[in-house]
Length: 138
Image (cartoon, rainbow, N blue to C red; front, side):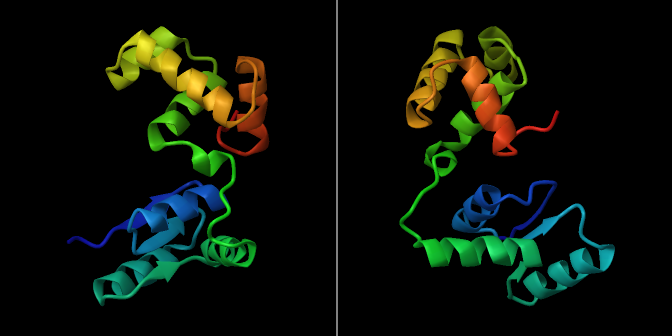
């Protein structure tokens, strides 16, 4: 097993939770000071875990809410989340299919699942949801 440290621009709760649940030993955002990144690498190398203050808050909120509670976004698979982001930014089903090397029909299936899971009706609502939940940057 190789310990994994996530270095990302995303500090929203759903990303932190997914990374930790997937087995990451640490989570640092790109906004963190270089010293934090060095400290994270050292701590993880020594067998520990490292979370930035924001990531720790996200985990604490999850515990306070109850770990069984899932946000709508967390109900999406990783691929559904990827497709949602592309759709929200205006990509066509064909463009998404090419970028992930999947069929257009598969993209349409993902889109349908996303709309159903998030209780949305169309791509406009999907885009608004993605922006409001900071899943995309404009």
